[in-house]
Image (cartoon, rainbow, N blue to C red; front, side, top):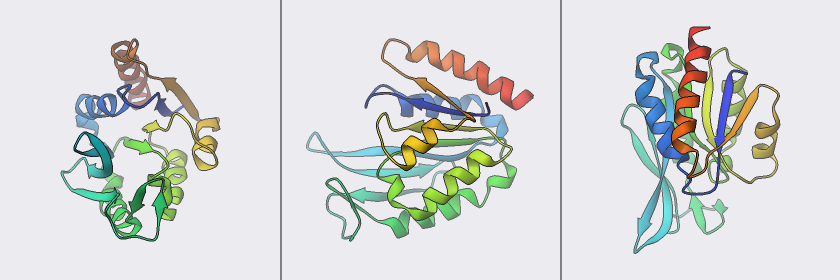
Length: 174
């Protein structure tokens, strides 16, 4: 299994783990992105995506003007697609992919829906956070034979980081 998906309830620490793994495996030039919540007045109002080179964009927000909606969020698919193009144009120099996250909002992009299976089918490991619940595409990714699914909880987060580090090291040095 060369692809590892981490899952868990919201705020279980999936993003924190992906960020830590990016630092641990920096020497392998990981390519990918981190999705962060945008909080205003103690409420989540959107999402920002940042690649590992420092480029970031707001791609979903309650106040965006877009015909595409996921729940209460309007999704700027063009901005997200452009971000994906710029982020993954460097992918040939990487040893692994880090994706946070494969979630409902990201799945509003057809480019994303095409990209993820391509990355999973590549000869490089994919380490990704994936929505705890989902149907269709998300469920299909979770069920792939080449994917190991690890659940993150508050209780096992630190242990999982150690476990993931060993698993990824084995994949990269294989």
